[in-house]
Structures are given as structure tokens and as C-alpha cells.
Length: 141
Image 1 (cartoon, helix red, strand yellow):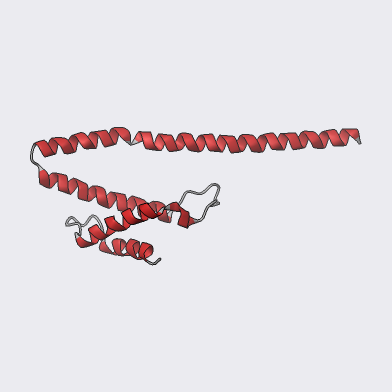
Image 2 (cartoon, one colour):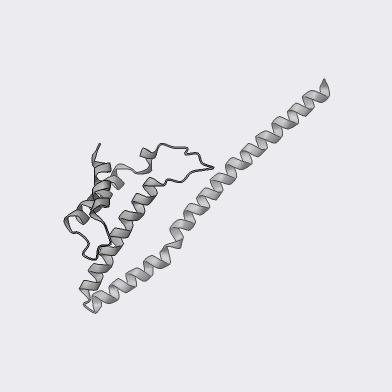
């Protein structure tokens, strides 16, 4: 009987340690990945700022406007893609999809979509039906 109790105790200890290690590893891995995602865009952002500043100094206003129009379309598309394809862990979502965006972010994306709706992209980079879909999604509340 003592041997069975000892065996069960070792199994409980092993499972507890494994679960704790799995949880801690996931937390550490998530935070490292999140920090990497923020830091990896810094050189791109710095280069973008330099490019825009040079164009301002050279009075190339139209090219700056074109750049920001494309950047706006890219941001709207990227947001909508991630809203429609949230991250999963082994096929399981651990949160409600409505929690993916806070009220301030919601207001900002609505503002961006309303701007794009009022000022359609002349190069055809952003389809108005996508803008309508996004606006209807957020304004339905």
C-alpha cells in the first residue's frame, strides 16, 4: 500500500511540475514574442519618418499624400484580417472575439473607414465594399 501511495504522489508531483512549466513557458514565450513584434517595426518606422521628412523638405506633397493613403489602406486591411483570423492555440480560442478590440480602437478604425469612404482611393487599392463591410460590422452595436 505504501508503494502505491508513493507512486501516486510522484505522478501528482510530475503532473504539477509539468503544468507549471508549460504555463510559465507559455507566458514567457508570449511576452518575448509580443516584445519582438513591437521592436521589429522600429527600424521600418524610423526609415518611414526619414523618407517623409525628406519629401516634405523637397516639397513633394503629392507623393507624401499617396504614401499615407496606401498606409491607411494597409492598416485597415491588416486590422480586418486579424479581426477575422484571431490567433488560436492548437485550434482553441481562449477568449471572446468581442474582446479583441477596445472602445478607443473601435472609434479609431471607424474614423479611418469613414475617411476612406468619403475619400476613395484613386488607385483602387481599397475596395469600397470592404469599407462598407467593416463599417457595418462596427456600427451594428
